[in-house]
Amino acid sequence: MKTKAAILYDINSDLKVEKLSLSNPKTGEVLVQMGAAGICHSDFHVISGQASQKMPCVLGHEGAGKVISVGENVTRVSQGDHVILSWLPYCGNCYQCNRGRTHLCKTLQDPVWDGTLLDGTCRFSNDNGEVRQLGTLGCWSEFCVVPQECCVTIKKSVPFEIAALLGCAVTTGVGAVLNRAKINAGQTVVIIGMGGVGLSVLMGAKMQRASKIICVDTNSDVKGLALSLGGTHFIETNKDTDVLSKIQEITEVGADHVFEAVGKRDLQKLAIDYCCPGGQVTFVGLDGPDASIALPTTEITRSEKTITGSIYGSACTDRDFILYANAFLSGELPIGEIVGRHYKIDKINEAISDMLIGKPGRGVISF
Image (tube, rainbow, N blue to C red; front, side, top):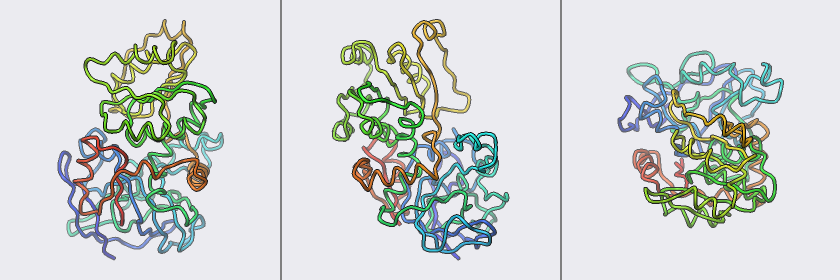
């Protein structure tokens, strides 16, 4: 069959929207008709070359859609199911999976990083040969073939644009709060970076009844959205802003929890300063693979600060996608509020540009 898809042929170039050939699902694989896909900064990491990826490649790793057909031995989903796609499939049998840490499973990592299906081959192709799919997904396509391990069935009452954001941003942010930081009611929170992930951290902190939620960003345009979602304070940063003093003024001692949701090492370093003694800093954003910061180890020891990270919200996707979808349906997670813009696949480069200039909320491709 043919499918329209957004393909990256070279770093630092625009994506090309073209028709590709898509072969049928093989054993253990699923054909999905995409309903919606999010515009995530991690896709731009591939475009910029910060994240290495063999090309050509269909980008997009945050999406949801409808199962059209299945290959042999597929047991997780059935034709007609609505599914969220996970870019971090797990085996269920390794050391980490057996301890409930499915997000740390490395068993299926190689094909995910190579941009192939689990058997090491591709289902997308053009006249010149195989075309890879980011995170073994390739959500920026009308149709895609994915491993069944990447599919989580959800209620059909969850709109595709909401389900798509559960596939990355919402799970990454809310999960960092619930699974990794484990915020308690009454604690104070600082969130650095109010993009899709930062706004999701904010929703998670609100769910946990944090007493003060301080949102920090360079872009004042996101202030209204952040405060409407439950932020209690907004600090717009510029070269003259003394963020630390403002946080100390609001909290008196610093925040119990600080989340860095941008992925920049200078902000990660500052996050430690914003944290109170006995508090926790959680790195959620991803910098380059060689990123490092100098840690004030003596001060960390004396103040008993905890420095940690959270990948994909430290989530078990089979559990948490459903949990967060139900929280949306009950009104506890207002995910629809963070959907800022809608695009068709032909406008993918405009969507990426809008993200990079900091337009508020998450951009979503509707198919």
